[in-house]
Image (tube, rainbow, N blue to C red):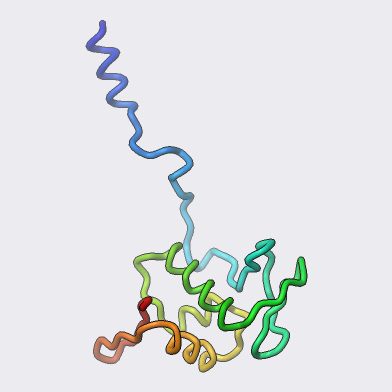
Length: 122
């Protein structure tokens, strides 16, 4: 009887907490945009240099917000390459791929693999 109980406990043993398990999510099904660091509302472009939160009115520099968003993207999708086009699609409110490229060139390391380019953190 004790052996059966021990076998059941071994079969039911979980090595990860239910709080550590993430729900399934997909890039295409998530809402895109830069999220406010204070209230998690979505931000919009005020000027080229600043973004403002729709909910709380917090203002953040575009460069800081983009790099924070790149970091969040990498945390959510660690196996995906960080490319200019991907981050452009992910940020949504930055209407210039060139602006995103400049920000990433300044803060990240560019990796060239043949005709493909992607970025890694320095």
